Length: 134
Image 1 (cartoon, rainbow, N blue to C red):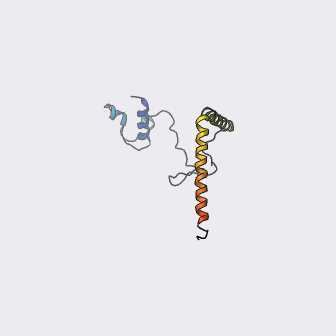
Image 2 (image 1 turned 90 degrees about the vertical axis):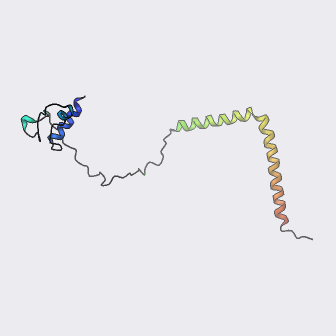
Image 3 (image 1 turned 45 degrees about the horizontal axis):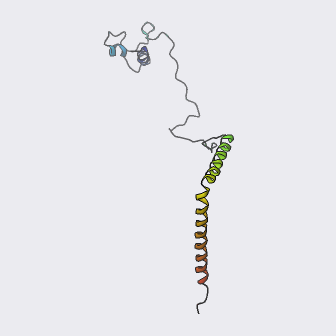
């Protein structure tokens, strides 16, 4: 096992969170100390124990999420990518139109005539509502 976990448990004992030699208990060895090792000769750590950082004043009282309101655009694509996509998309449409012109042109003419007939019939029906019947 690594020595990190033992040092962490010794720090807990030094600060009075636990009151026994936890690493020796886990490993099944004779305890190095009993109680809180505050005495200089019984300290498990020879280095300075770092202090806990102070809470900043800007830290919230409650655990909550505040999204930034100034960032409206989640995806930040550069301008060159937008232009490149536009060119590729336009090129694909032009190439597809050229390649399938023999099937697209007759279909458009057919659809156009059907659409024209639909609107023409609809208009005639609408006008007939206002005409007097003999």
